[in-house]
Image (cartoon, rainbow, N blue to C red; front, side, top):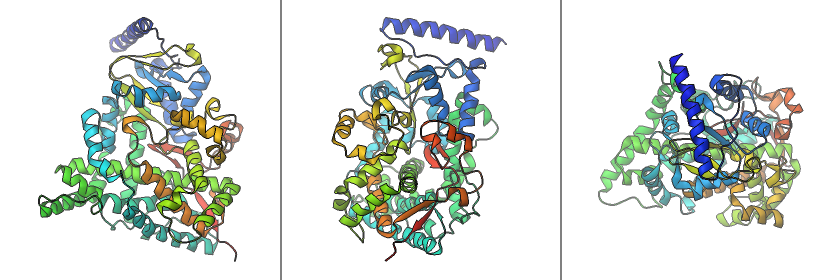
Length: 541
C-alpha cells in the first residue's frame, strides 16, 4: 500500500508540474484517458485483447474518437504515454524536431530480442553509423537486384500456375513471404541456400494457423517460425507496456527463437569475415558483394553484423510481403482495378521481366501500390520518446494550442494507419480503395504540398533506406503475376485455417473494419491472420 500511495502521489505531482510547465510555454496537456481500473491498467488489457481478438489497433482509434481529438495521453501505469494520429505531430517528431526525440530506453530494452544493436535498435551517433554502413548498398538501382527478383519470381509463378491449373487456391501471403525471404537471402546474405520456395506449401483447407498466417512446416517453418515468433513477442511486450518484464521474469520469451536464428545467420557472417580477410586491404565493390560483405568491410563485430542483417531482413522480407499480400487482397475485392492494371502491364510489357524504365512509366501501377500502402501500411505505427521538454502541434481539441511533452522519456506512439484514413485529409472516401486519387491532379497536389499525410516508409533522417528497393521488388512481382493471370478470387472462408475469418459482428462496425473479408492484424508489420487464400485464373485463349 505504501508503494501504491507513493506512485499515486508521484503521478499527481507530475501532472501538476507538467500542467504548470505547459502553461509557461503557452501550451496545454492532451486529454488523459480515464480508465476503469487504477493506473489505467484496463487499457493494457484492452490492447492485448485487440491484438489477439480485434481489428488492427482499433482500441487506440476508439480512444481518439471517444475524446474527439488527434492526440491523447493513455496514462498507462501512472506514466505519460501519448498516442497520436496527427500527421503534424509525426512531422515534428520524425523531422523538424528530430533531435528532441529518440527511441527511448524502455522501447530499446523491450525490443532488444529482435533488433539488438542493429539500425532499428539504436539512436544518435550509433544510428548514424548504422545508416552509413548500409546506405551505399541502397543508393543505386542495381541490375543485380532485378536479376535476383527474376530468379525467384519464376519459382513463384510455377507454384501459382500449378494451383491455378488444378483449380485450387494458394496462400499468397505465405508464398510472397517465401519470395521476399529467398530474394533477401541473396541480397543480404549472399546465399541461395534458403530455398524456401522449394519447401512444401500450405494446402487449402488443411493448413494450420501460424503466428502470422498459415503455419509453415519443415526447416523453413523452423527459421521463419522463430523469426515471426520474435515479432509477436515484441508486439506482446509493447502492448503490456511497462509490465512485460514482470511477465518474463523467469523466462526471456525471445531467447529460444534467437538461438534458431543464430544457428542460421552467424555462420554466414563468419564466412563474410573470412572472405574479408582473404581480400586483404581490398574492399568489396558495391556491384560485387552483398550487404553482409559490405558490413564485414565496416566492422569485425559478429553480433553487430548479425543484428544488422536481421533488422534488414525484417525490412526486406516482411514489409514487402505485406504490401504484396494486400495488393492481392485488393485485386480480389476490386476486380476492376486488377483489370485496369493488367491492361497497363500488357501495354508496356506483355511478357518477360520488366526493367527500371518499364516500372517508372507505369503510373497506374504506382497508384495501386500507394493506395494499398495508404490503407494497409506495412508498419502501421511507430514510437519515439522525448529527450527534452518539447512542444508538438495541437488540434481542434486544444484550440490550436501546442501540446506539451514532458522530458525524460515521455513516449509518443504515432499511427500512420489512422492518419492515412482520416476523412479531413483524404476526403469522405478515405476508407475506400481508390487508386485514382494518386492520378487526380488536385489530390496529388494536396499530397505533394503536405507529404506527411502519407508515411508508409517513415520520414526525416530515419526514413526507410530500402524504399525504392521495396517499390521495385513489389512492382516486379505484380507485373509478372498480371502477365500470367487475369482473375483473382478470395477463398478465405473456404480454405483458410479455422479462426482466420473476421467475426460476423464486424459488419456492424464503421470504416474498413465493416468491409474486411480477412482478419487484419499487426505484429511489427501488418498481416492477414491465417494467410490470404486466393484462387487465380489463367486467361482463356
